[in-house]
Length: 384
Ligand SMILES: Cc1ncc(COP(=O)(O)O)c(C=O)c1O
Image (cartoon, rainbow, N blue to C red; front, side, top):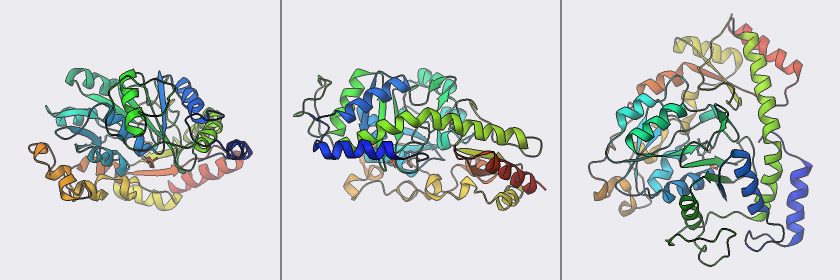
């Protein structure tokens, strides 16, 4: 969360004082309005607000029919929730390498595709856009679906098109650490009406009974409850108004710093620097030693140490504890026999290498010229 203030407080209090906090038959239709505004901003036909990014990914996969017997390819560098959503549905996450951009390596996706691959989940980690041209071509060639995890990339784009709108489904997170936030929250977008309807059904076990604005014609099945309240919807509408301003200020800050230090230090390559959300400046070095020295100099951090964002820290996958009991553990389900599930801490050495040679400096959209100048000096000093 970068910007937050009176507008969010006023919106929340308007809803609270209305006494109308349930999204169905509400006085102000805050959630439904947010969904409309989100889909318009992103350029998708449908939007659905859920209570987390994890719920959005899970509902997207469920809407595509992912379940036991399926493999879903996820990158080695992402939050544990990306792989966890696959396991929640009884399917098996297949981990692929990230390349120097720190996003899914299309070459490794191609190596890992099998007859069981139902979907892949490219992740625009730290707001860095994935190579969607290559991944879309692979999807066409191999016939798998794409669920984009844009949870860390609200509003970013690739070649002028918003992240989250390339595949069958795109997922966003609005938890407290994201570009826009309501404390917790998430959304999915899709341009497929059937997927949208099934996502509504999955996210609301009561969808048979409530009069959704979108009449649901798809056959119902057992859902969950991932609904949000009108307070969340009202806050997110205000946050969405701020989104493009936040992104353009972040990009200005990042560009200014990059231009001022590019003669002394190198950066991780980007699949689209214009569409990058610019929340982070990733420096990349030839050796781990050089990265560690620079990390100390700028008091930055190396993504290899970000714990649950790196595959070797995911106990649900590393220890094959994919369910709350043995019978619900996809790794023990006979239907999944023969699927690619042998992943250990050393499975993705190239990813670990890139992550250990990269150093992050976080950006902020409200840094003024003086702060930017300090950061530039710090970086130049750290380069010796
Ligand atoms: C890449 C990624 N995917 C999914 C999620 C899950 O989002 P949420 O915390 O809203 O469930 C996160 C959240 O940190 C994330 O960073």
